[in-house]
Image (cartoon, rainbow, N blue to C red):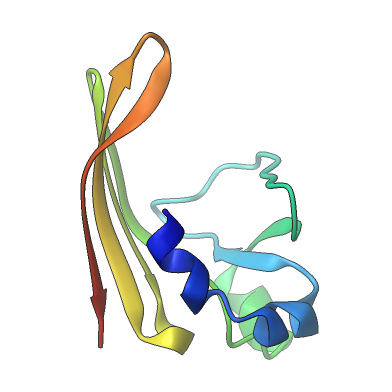
Length: 103
């Protein structure tokens, strides 16, 4: 979502070199995540605390039901969160609705 780009502070991410996602109940698998740039790391809360990382995305909900998906995440360092709904069309996920907020 283009609206989120302004919250991904390049200076904060550059300090870590990678975009960090918190591994939790919503994101708990061992899989390779990637985006063009920067690289993405999936870290546990203990790893984040030990490395003193302040900038990370926390997914609180990822729910798949049939051809729909609900996603809820927050990026506390910037005080922003997002709730989005997607639907599946020809094996591609399409954004149905979104709600972005700032604290």
